[in-house]
Image (cartoon, rainbow, N blue to C red; front, side, top):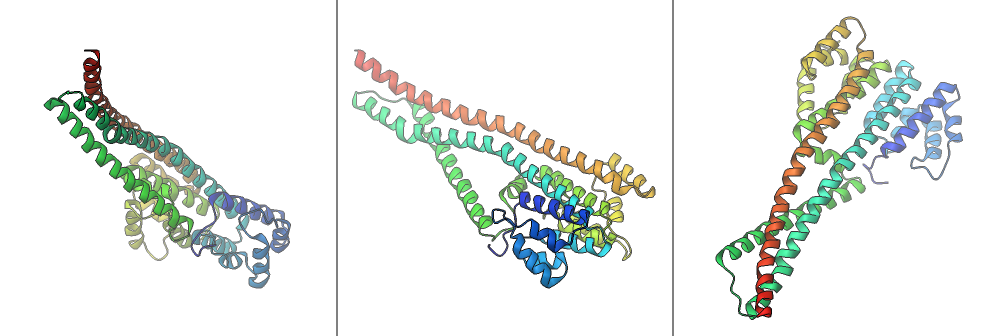
Length: 343
């Protein structure tokens, strides 16, 4: 395995569920891991059990496998400190399940628009640079002469097709490079996270949903407030939300943690922020965060879908207009050829 290549979300979800069940059943962890040995799974449980026998703690044994992300290791270490390993493990399983679902949603949402635009650009390129010149040459050999409007239309279509094909090559190259880098473990961010950067508002909401869920997991697991603060911030990708959280965290006192970060950062809509403040006074932030987490996740998905639903028709209309222009330019010499042949 490459040095920085993490296990998939699906594998981490399954693993966290399994160790949660082992903790919940009261079995010794090493014996429980031995029961899970299977060469077909992504995580080498047999080696993990061997490392557990040497290290004595599951978090230390997991740290010997570079496939486990840092936030999972820190969360399990904190859970071992407070004795809530089973609850934290189950909550982490839910976290990776939701993360996998979010990535599938983004892939499904982005795949069709990108495919449609790529097909239209390729069609324009083929018509402009391969088909139309042949008809023009035949038309010219038969004595036909293009008018200025046709030449202008053709040159414009060729320019747009050339730019479109160039951009398509650049985008495909970018996707290929980042896919290879992620596959080799040279980059910890997958393509869906990188593509979200092109939609700033949707990215912020997606980051907020991720922060809200990990905060819910840590608060429900009973993790120490200061440790929970550091773990939750570490889960947020680079962006506006991370900057806001870090600025607020630096202003907190040494005895303040995730509760204070949530109530003082003002990262949620006003009504939700007031509700969280009331929940903090009642000592019910952990319960309220479950609803907040669901709401922010739904808002993030709705925002991205709404953005793409606005952009996609505009791009399709523009490209369809240029394809129509190319076809019109193709039709003129074709009609000329038919008229010459008919006479």
